[in-house]
Amino acid sequence: MLHVADIQEHKEAYIKALKKRNFEAVELFDKVLELDEKRRTTQAQLDNTLAESNKLSKEIGNLYKSGEAKKASILKERTGNLKEDSKNLQETLNIAVVELDTLLYTIPNIPQESVPAGTSADDNEEVFRLGEVPVLAEGALPHWELAKKYDIIDFELGNKITGAGFPVYKGKGARLQRALITYFLDKNIEAGYTEYQVPLMVNEMSGFGTGQLPDKEGQMYHVTNDDLYLIPTSEVPVTNMFRDVLLEEKDLPIACTAYTPCFRREAGSYGAHVRGLNRLHQFEKVEIVRIEQPENSNTALEGMVDHIKEILNELKLPYRILRLCGGDLGFTASLTYDFEVFSTAQDRWLEISSVSNFKTFQANRLKLRIKDKQGNKRLAHTLNGSSLALPRVLAGILENYQAEDHIKIPEVLIPYCGLERIDLA
Image (tube, rainbow, N blue to C red; front, side):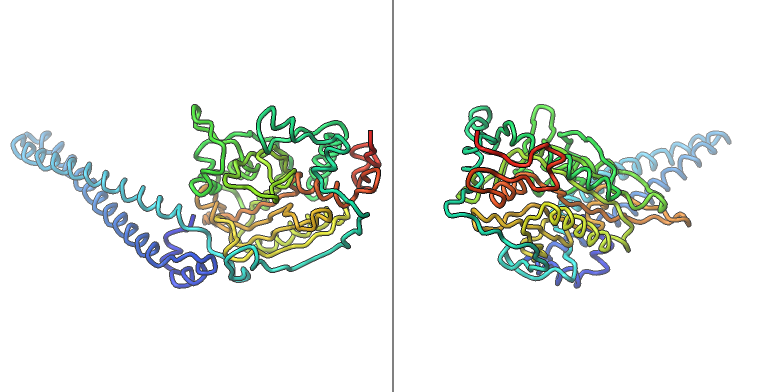
């Protein structure tokens, strides 16, 4: 969430930057500043009314002590009016605060200067590419057909148990999935991230803290009886561990990693691009989250990008990195890099990681602050990234490592799953 003081100070620059998102902010900003002025004016009136009421209360006490009950009674009538005024002012203030916050929740983060303008994924900027696309034998199969051929993932069984988008991993498929999870976690821990196991459901406050609410409310599974949400990513519970926390400078940077299942309704998704593992309602993901001092966050983001590059280099998958344009940038992000693995059998790129700097956008919602040695307080910067999301990584491995009668296991994963290849039964 943007800070009102920043909007006031950088109004014109923010309006220009938000145009990269194709977001018109002029009227919204005017309304925000109008509501903030109303809030501040009402707060000042309320403070003055309460101060006058407290002052009169002391005078009334002194008058009673000195036997001047008649004068005290006259002042009591005045305090009664002041109490009614303060009640009305408090109600007006509460309404203004709610209206202001509701409006602020609708404004996306300010894109950084390096974010290219654009309206869709077609306008994203490729900044890096590595790896040769393997030449597969004639008749190479997409991963959903390989999964059936080698009996390692059962999409129909998942559909029977739950519905489309909930696959069942079997035998060597389950072993390969588990190997990837452990490998990703080990790489993150080696890089200095502390592992956490976190809840798979969060409350409404947590959803607002990281920006999933109200922006993506329709994309999350809602447990209505308990008013809890199934997590769309472990970013939500991990980052919310630091909600309402005041950190010391010496505590930073903070680096966390977590493995969780993730749940997304993916409402409105259809077509060939959602087949197999391409888009699921339940999937596994290993996440990295960082809390940084503002001056270090963009350097930290580049470090996260390099870390994920190292993982993909070891998996020997062809990949590219995109800097997202304003029109494709997530609501809460100020800068995002997407990693995509090339699926040879599908002849298309598959997104497998998104690494973002949110600057103070989440921290302002979370009230996550840093205190320096002089006692000054400021908002922290938060970052997160997939390291990595499993379904499309697994799809890339199955398709790019396939041979006529087996699927080869990437060398780096062999110690983790105890397999060198997956053969036909």
